[in-house]
Image (cartoon, rainbow, N blue to C red; front, top):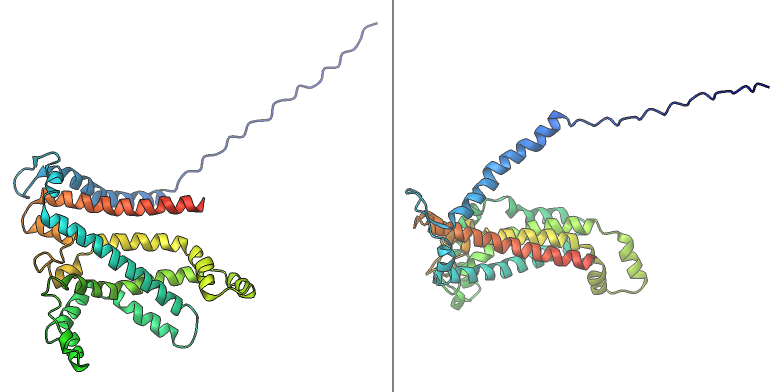
Length: 307
C-alpha cells in the first residue's frame, strides 16, 4: 500500500527586528559641543600653554627660552616664594576654617523658620553680592588710623588697642583675612542651609524620643547627613583660598615687606611687574597642584569612608 506523506508547512523564521538607532538631535549636539569648544579654547588651551611656559624663561616680548625645571628649582631658594607659600597655607587654614565654622554656625542658628529669620539671612548674604574690590575699599577706610575701627576703640576707652592695622607686618595678614571672611561666611551659610533643609525631620524626632541631647543629634545626625555638602564646601574654600587676590591686592598689594603676600599676588606681580612670565606660569602650576591635591585627597577619603 502506498503511504501518503503529509509535508508540514515550513515555518519561516521570525524576522529579526533591527533596533533603530536614535539619532542625536543637532540642537542637543550644539548645546553640548559649542560650550565644550568655548571652554576648551578659553580655559583648557591656555592652561596647557601655561604648563608649557612654566618650563621656559619668557618676558612676554621675546621668544620663550627653554630652561627645563629651572623655574621650579629656583622656587626652593626664593625666600618670597617660601614666605608666600606659608602665608597661603595660613590663609587656607584661617580663612577656610573660620568661614566653614562661621557658615555652619549661622546656618544652624537660622535654619528654623521663625519671624524675622529671612531678614537675618539676607543681611548675612548681602556681602556676597558686593564686589571684592568694593568690599576692600570699604574696609580700607575702616582700617585707617582715623577710621571707624580706631575711633570705636577710642570711644570704648581702648586707646592702647588703636593700631595701623594694614601698615604693620604683624597685623596686615590678619587684617586682610577679616574682609574676606565677612564676605565668605554668608556664602557658606547658604550652602549649609540647603543641606540642612534636606535632612529628614523624622531622624531628629526619633533621637528626641530616645533621649538624645542636642550635641548628640548634631554629631550623630547633622554632621553625617551633611557629608556631601562638606565636600562642596571644602572645594569652594580651597579654590577661593588659593585664588584669593582681589582683597589682598586692593588692601596691601602683598605688603608691607611681603608680610601678606600670597601665591596669587606673587604670581601677578612676578608676571606683570617683573615681566617674568615663565616663572609666574610655574607659580600658577604650583597653585593648581595644591588645589587639586587637597580636593582629590579629601574626596578619595570621603568615598572610602562611604564604602
